[in-house]
Amino acid sequence: MKLKGAKVLITGASSGIGEALAERMAGLGATVGLVARREDRLADVLRRVQKRAPQSRMWVGDLGDLEWAARVALEAWDGFGHLDVLVNNAAMPKRRPATELTDAEVEETMRVNYLSPVRMTLAVLPRMLERGGGWIVNVASLGGRLGIIHEAAYSASKFALTGFSESLWIDLRGTGVEVRLIQPGAIDTDIWDRPGSEPPLYDGPKDPPSVVADGIVAALGSEHFEHFLPDNKWLIDAKQADIDGFLAGVAQMAKR
Image (cartoon, rainbow, N blue to C red; front, side, top):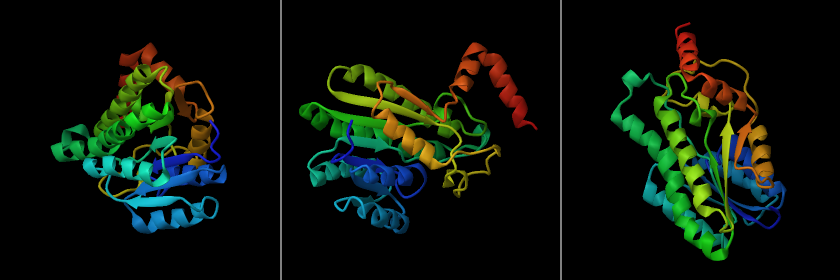
């Protein structure tokens, strides 16, 4: 699709992938709606985005509030006249051994990472169908295809978003509304350092958020549904080839 003149709503836009994507899309001529809970950081992103896309706006709030999430999607639609692209990017970590997780932690993670994308998608979908076009971009994770050490709640939320996206693509085929699923790997964002989670066991290289931002833009011009950014699909293939051996190997790594 052509982004010049497009209306785009991006969640999790105050940092990381969302911030990089907002600036990238504004640079390509899109008007961008920014959604996040950290007002000061979001306002800073908006100031930079408005230099290229003056009509861009922001909405500040907690996407764990599902009624608010759905309402913001419709407010953005009404404010811009329509939405061409909804990017469900916001996410929270929850690094904790499964034996130490609480019900509340799992439910919070599912609300932010899975249920808010669903609610926002379902809010705008009837309007996209009526217009005969639109794009839903769901940013999941490599953890949406692989169970990550000490990330049961996070991986569950991303597996759910992956499954929802697959079924959504099938149900919407031929309607003019397109679905793209993004599976980032280890990306250098503040999700690794947020309070409320244990330090990550992974200490390997991380790619910059621009890798995912550029990949999302490319996905909007691609016929392919799922995009691994960077291309770590070989890990999924290795898991599927021998899931018992793969999981045993990961478990052994966790003991080191």
